[in-house]
Image (cartoon, rainbow, N blue to C red; front, side, top):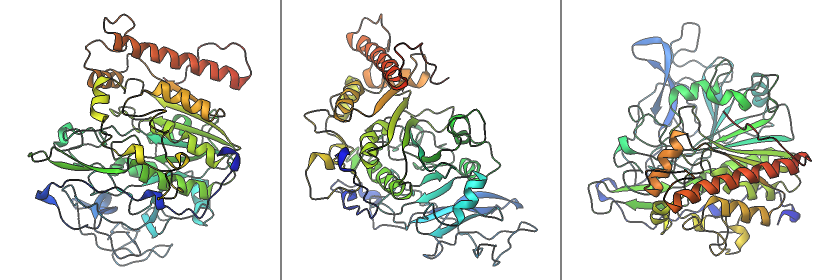
Length: 479
């Protein structure tokens, strides 16, 4: 497949049709509603300041500038320098989970020349004139693919971020960890116990969503100091070797490691009944399709699986690994490297018990440009189940299989046995009080440690091969 070098820029997304054969929680079933759009609005207590709130879409043109009163800024009914009209905002939260996911149209949003969060219809191309401003300011655009992309409760839109760099050949794709779920509580029947999109503040956002308002504002504005503008994401730090790279940030708001393609009802016939829309493969596939179309000249790709916050409680950076093979196939001449942050402890006996029926539908998830009627192995995102299955195999086996299938890729894990989320996830999935410990009396716990040591050794070996060195000191991949 890699040698064929297909670049299907006119991607037909037939493979993203979602399986919707699931039981219903009849207490809130009903027809599809429009998804609420997060827009910038005036604070009721202080009209000179703004905040983000959810509002109903204002016409199909998506001119979502709200009614503002900012002194010298845009007032009600006025038009900014880009021809976007301000509009009154009617709050629209769509609080309850939706059996039938809400619907949305594609749009592109960014902070325009007068400092407003402006949106336009459709997904902008990086060749659009507006991107020149974004390059000089080193800011992110927010792109909403529209339906069938959606977050896990079916009542929030999915979006991804893109920042165009000065390099045409280098691409960093961050697959964010969101937190996984395979039961009613984890998927959000009780907001306080939700693990899907766990980094959302339940006090602010009771539904799985992409970003909170304050984080969105920090990421999109040029003069902010947000998490995804630091370290390797820093666009101005002279010591950062990635500062000129194009950056794509793909969130996970579906609890399925970016690989789901199913709607699953948990807690049937109970008060906790909830339908989770595990559409990670659909959401991420739409984002990757846009990437392939807009960055045709890439020769180096870093796929990174990590959390969005330094205080992240999420597991699930594996999305980067599961999409590595497809990225290599779409860019057959590119060097593709993948690093997963703090996901070593995900698999264990209880994990396999919860995943045995594949509630996410990941086994049937296809790559974006696959024929929906085809059953060819290359059309599926994950390997054939007889070779590797998320319901019974761990990541070390996955890395080994993909490295043999596509020997040009390389994987590395950056994990710590002392990291609290690692310990929490290990105990959750293995039910062992002593986890990731080489002296553990439990053989499974010892195996998890050995798996981590094997991954560390493999990463060192791969780094030595890539660099041409015969020996390498232990690398410090992350703090």
